Image: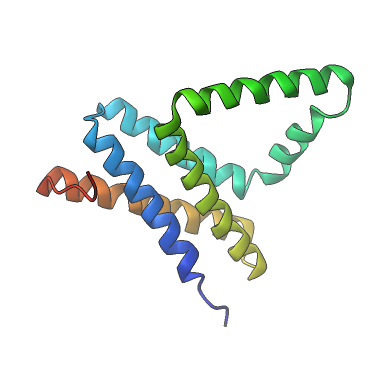
Length: 144
């Protein structure tokens, strides 16, 4: 029987709870909450089921001189966005790092790609849902 990666699961859960708290603290509209859910689905899909196509797309940029230039421009633009929106970028980077750690733990335990996607998606959406329920129904903020 494979051991469950509890630490990684807890980190993903906490990262998404913190992101949900951030969204609620800034009184973000329901449209943005839906965007956050779409981001979580895309992130989990890219890290599990879609890893091979994403990997090939990233490597495509390094096959020519133009690809190097475009990759450098995109990277520089991304750095500017991260610096300008430091607080929101830190939430996305923490969620990505936690999900990547969970994906690596699931991979080393030889859990399939579809099951990894399901586990990552359920844990991430559970974290976002917990934050929404607690904050919407009780008004309690985890930090501030």
